[in-house]
Amino acid sequence: MDTNNRRENANDVPAIKERKRWLFFGLPFTFTKYSLDAKCLKLYKGFFTTTEDDILLFRVMDVSIRRSLMQRIFQLGTMIVISSDKTNPNLEIKNIKRVHAFKDALDDRVEKERLRMRFKAGEFVSTDFDDDENINT
Image (cartoon, rainbow, N blue to C red; front, side):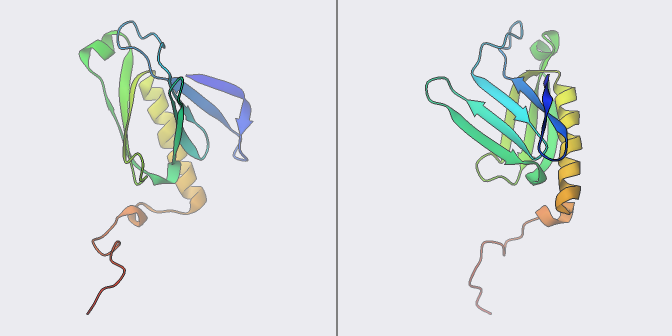
């Protein structure tokens, strides 16, 4: 994990950067990068055509880790982020080094952002009535 010396946002939290790696030998020869700051998890993909996407931290509902035998041999892991984000509701961050440290940092920042925004876990629960605008009684 690369921690920059400059501080992000007013929360004085350093940005954490990681990149997707090849499964074999854990070499970072891919064009997918992840950045975690105080307010969002950012995803950068592509070489000729690039895509940037982000998930606001207060939208993250669950984070889990999956590691295959080959990932454990090369000290890599996959982090699965479940969120209420429309574009990336189930984001898989594949083959990153120090996956447990990245998950711990994400969990910590999600909790701080929820406290800052004054969100509670129950506010993320949706019902069948959320999409219904005109309900006839």
